[in-house]
Image (cartoon, rainbow, N blue to C red):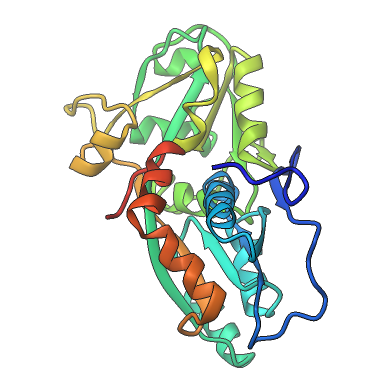
Amino acid sequence: MRATTSRLTILLAITGLVLVNCSKKSNDSAATQRYITVKGSDTMVHLASNWAEAFMAKYPEYEISVTGGGSGTGIAALINGTTDVCISSRNIKSKEITLAKGKNQNPVEFPVARDGIAVILNSDNPVNELTIEQIGKIYTGVYTNWNQVGGPDAGIIVNSRESSSGTYVFFQEHVLNKKDYAASANLMPSTAAIVQSVSQDKQAIGYVGLGYVQGAGNAIKVLGVKTDNNSPAVLASEAAIVSGAYPISRDLYIYTNGVPQGLTKNFLDFTLTPEGQRIVSETGYVPVK
């Protein structure tokens, strides 16, 4: 499921994983489209990269470029007509739809996978479970010391994605109850940066898409999340997301401008085939089919 290195270069940078195809043809046309761009969610960039690799292995005459930058960045690119496919870990906003229509663009939404947002701690942190309310109070700055939630007497280092991230928006809406993040929160340029920070600092907390957990190793641990004080703690997992037991879960989306055609449609269709959905599972997310 790997493309040859002459066609595909994978760069892991501080801004996130960027899959860049360096052989774009400048004379592509709508009638003979052989190259498309995919841009957006940092959560989904690993998944989209794996889809692109597998698709190009099956159809070597086509070329796909995948870049991250955040769901907001991908949606903006779709609105501005600078990407063929937007990957997003949140729904497009009504104001974005209005902006798109003003530019004669028509975003169409396709759920392609499901995800659970895992709350992660350093493996040396003795705290194992928190309620959604407690997590929200940490991220809004009400709680600033681990001893306020049953941990050691040590300050809490709060790590978040930056505001262009769909995960940032979803977490704010569903865990923070739409309140502002604490002014002291570290806004990270990528999910990988959050994992790295939490793995290196005993006092840190972060949140990541489920697909990032399996590659993080033993330097972090996943926090059990409780809906309230009387609920059991649930770890983010495929089974818990499918059953609805894990309380911080969401759909992951592909957006196109209008009903997809040509190579864009072929790529979208591939993501929903049994092979495409197997890749979803292998990357650490949850199939929708």
